[in-house]
Image: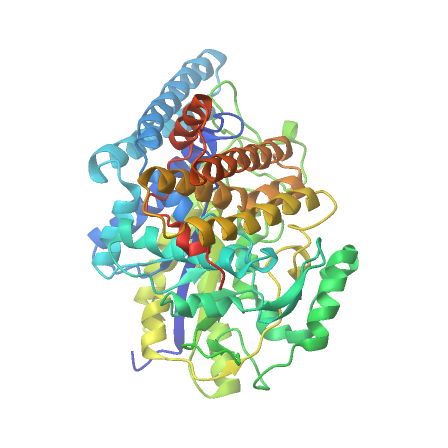
Length: 569
């Protein structure tokens, strides 16, 4: 586009941990049902509507392998049908109650909920044929969107103690993507945007140390072109690492890293609006990274200062029971729930227009300033958790619709996907990055602290055992042994999910997360011992076979998993 001042892309990261067969409410399958009804289907509905009206709403969407595996599972599909029917029935009950109690505004909102969930039900069953990943895949095949992958179960790469673990997380993520979406992925979202370069790494719990490869090495190994990092990694370089002050073990790790790491190429004038290549001395294909834009990010991420805190939007916290529908608006962020005012749908479109206009103008100003400073066009990479839109900020998908339309209509802007931008503006500059994440403090504290140390002790134990299994039995042709080992591998992957430490540290579902860690560790240990017993030719008790069958039914993801992915690098 000759008149363009620069490019823009949304990058939405869709993720939930494996919850099928592990609880329903308040923690479990209800999370998946809510996200499907309030985020994934609404986003699809808006995207397909844009296409139907002649737009090409290019955006980049990450769908983690573990989320994809749940969305294609018949158990989810059948359960979701009942869930959404229950939401419709609850709204009808609310309407009758509010009619009796003479709350006309709430009656109108109840009627909206009936209509809204009826539309989601129709979209799920008829338009998308109960196949949410397939609906996204269809848009990708048309060149409308780009879907990227992630680590298999969202394992936290920098703290995994074995290179084989990162290799397996990436390899499994790529293979699952190819099976479901029918092509090789080009991009990967590093879980929690967490990156660690290659250096002589010291295990923060066991003290074991040794040379480790940078995360980018594994991306290159499995044919990935690019990934994403948080702003401070690109812009702050070695100066960051403030999380170390909160946890001695992490301070030791940071000090060790800082003493050894040197950027391969020193570059002045870094910018989050320019993609770079990872600076590395390791022989590999170059891997690019795009940087999250903080300035547009805070406009959505912040509940207090961003658009979701607008008093006219639907309040997330106040719900009407037993159905759980919401009938009140934000009103004011710090207002007591009892003082929230009723939600008026008619007030919403004007606020969405204002917010979308402000967002687009902010983004244009950033691109103009970048061009003035660097003499070339840049890209604003607006990165968010997908679940912010619809689930946390109910009106979010409608806002995305406006932004996509207005950016595409603006002759000064180029709406793009990351892969398309990568092809048209291949990065050539290298930057050596420190390790870090987009978590609190920019480091690892959320995932490794005094509350979560015990989870990493179990993860590290299982990582070593996985390498041992791969070395001893990776080439065995015995189908029974292979099935046992594949289930051991699944439990290992599920144990590594970064969600468990996040939920423990934030106290949002602490008991549930701790129970899940204990469950997958116990499953792994029993099945590991079973694999050794069987592999050595000894008799396996009948109860162990029954246990294997139950666990295979509960955790039946990643059918392509291969024990050899855990061989020592």
